[in-house]
Length: 293
Image (cartoon, rainbow, N blue to C red; front, side, top):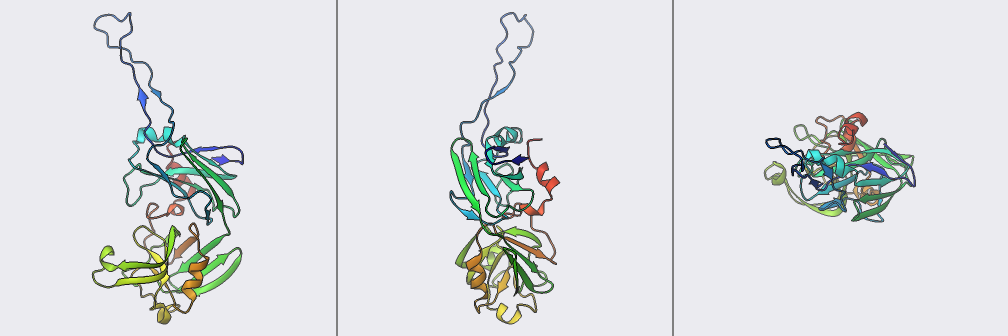
């Protein structure tokens, strides 16, 4: 599906679609006949109750950011096409909504919109969810980073300019997720506890300049071990580590939500619903996740 400036693209979302059925018998119905119901009529939704959009009004995002709508309740499969029609994207882009099984939500509680390819820098987008939610946002400059766990290097391409950054990734058995992850948020310091990810008492403390990549706990952050091992060996518990000599801070300062981090040379690919893993589905798979066929 393609939306042009000035035209709204219909797509997937959530909210309870009501139906009205009248099973009263017709006046001339004969005794013993089953009542003939009127055709089911779907009521138009005035708004999508319990809907939340991940992008703030006026926000600038990176080229990989999906529009993600989550709901306070699961949307039954039979209602998803109708509620998709209540979500509209106004932008000059080819894209589609797709229902995503979020790692922390029920099936039917999340639907995302993404373009066929990354957003074009400078694109202005308006999202409407029913009559109750409107968001205007802008796609900023392009930043796409590729982490190669085999060479222990990260290639950062920012608006066509390329540089290489030494990294250390997950040690064998604690491998960093393979595939494409989109920055969801960042914080100057984050308390990380190995017990929350099944690694016992391996670590518990603050890590700085933390760029958040997955719901399951993958970050790209400053790590003192990177001072020794970045560019040479993978020694982390799954995160991507950068040195404390200003390398981590420099990357942190330039990253915004929606920027793209792709890991290559590792093992298991990150799931679509583990954070914003939307780009790990090819276009045919993505389109197939829409209820609008």
